[in-house]
Image (tube, rainbow, N blue to C red; front, side):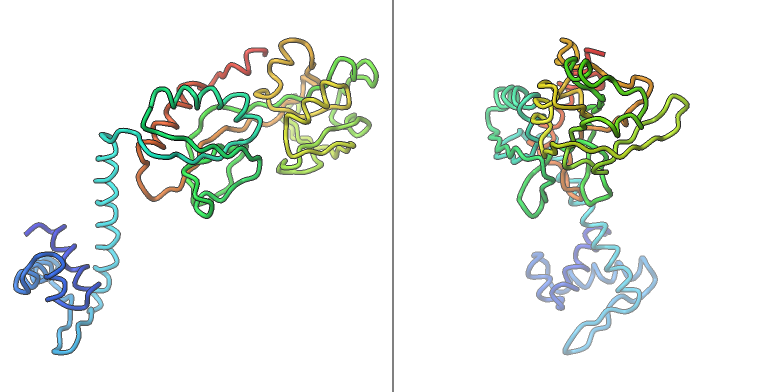
Length: 303
């Protein structure tokens, strides 16, 4: 007998607590159900179920097998669904959460082109710099920038995110340029609220050593675009991702500072619930975005 089928019959017997009920749900006779259970017992050389006139109970071997059967059958079902999804046309509504500035500056044209390429998909975009709960809030995927904490989410890297310490030429002319991280303590520093270490900027020195410095300033914001405007106006120094400031750096509206000290490079990722196959709409969207950015995105062309 097909062992996967026998496993499915066994788990159905356990779920219903009855050979006859399991048979009715599976379209088998009670004798057919018994044959599948007997085949499993013969294969394992162990009794799986105690039967009385009133109830069924699992033996120790039956309990161990039931746990494994449930897992095996779930994985088989997922594999079948994933294989089917390869031939499925992307369709339906795709709900995504993206950071505000990255979404407006870089994802907006990509999403437009994606919708033109896949006319059976509708996209619902939430622009928000907070980290949403995908399952709780019903999102199919989110774009996350920065180090990813351990979680139940799966992730695929879309592109690198590099940051630069920078300020406007007017600020540098007025206040001078810091040469070492400790110099920043005497400067007006513009702070991003959601930084992993608020009020503390970390660098890697020319010898590979890690250096951190406490900073302060009069402007803290939850959005990088606001900090960019403040830097352009000459208010202060900021640590800004190049996907926000790349054009300004290329044009000289902002200038990089402390070139001997490097900032951490992180990733831009698409994150989505794991443990189930990717739908065609999610898979095709992620593939589309990855193909547009890559490891040397256009915003780093200034360097």
